[in-house]
Length: 211
View 1 (tube, rainbow, N blue to C red):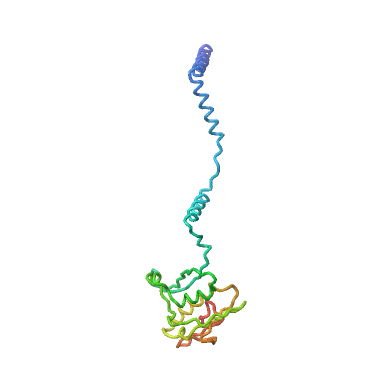
View 2: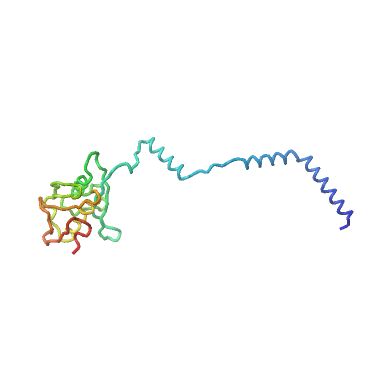
């Protein structure tokens, strides 16, 4: 390309620049200013999960719904069948009445058996309905659960084993830590239970029925 051609091209570029600036200068300047404004906008960091939780809490407060974690409850162990028809221990919750001893309440509820709604879902108990709670005596390190003699009668070995585990699981989960739990029948500590004389290791734990 000759020097003359380069000069012509340069002149055309300069003329084009002035033409564009003259005709579209104000529009270009406005666009640049808008771009600067967008860059200067600070977008705050928003914790979406926190916002959702706060919204839920607000709705619950407006409806008078208490946080379920604030309600003290007792864990009661009954029996049920899983999807493969295998027996399992099923934990259900009972709201603890104000001023009620947790362990005493849990044993009372255990002896009552599952409620109507729980029964409709296949929940049941191996503890005889005639079993009565005679007393619960607690000290700093020791708990004595005294039941009526009905607790040890009726049903075979499997039934006795299941009712004992219901009692053990319920007692352990509703008593204070580091407290030893003992089972008494009609005022006497027992070492065997049932017509076949199943051995019991005391204090009670989930291995108390293992030979």
